[in-house]
Amino acid sequence: MTKTETITKIRKSPKDTGSSSVQIALLTERIKQISEHLKNHRKDYTSQVGLMKLVGQRRRLLNYLKRTDSEEYARLLKRLDIRK
Image (cartoon, rainbow, N blue to C red; front, side):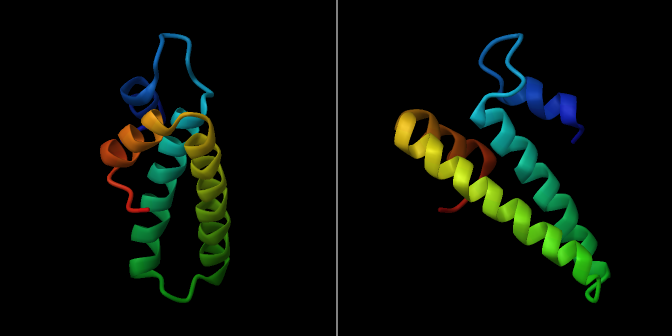
C-alpha cells in the first residue's frame, strides 16, 4: 500500500496528514515492509536497528494516543491489526 492510500484510509478530514493516527498507520506500513525485507535478508543488521527504532517510535505514539483519545486508540488497533 502506498503512502497516500494509507493516509486517505486513516485520516479524519481531507487535510489531515499529520495526526498521530496517520503517523501510526504510516509507521505500521513501514514496519511491515522492513519485516518482509528481513525475512529474505536475515543478516541485514542495519535494517534491524532501523526497524527497532520505528517500533519504538510507534509505541510512543500509541502511548500518547491512548492517554489523549482512548476511543481512537482502540479503533486504530483494530483497524491496523496491531496487538498491544
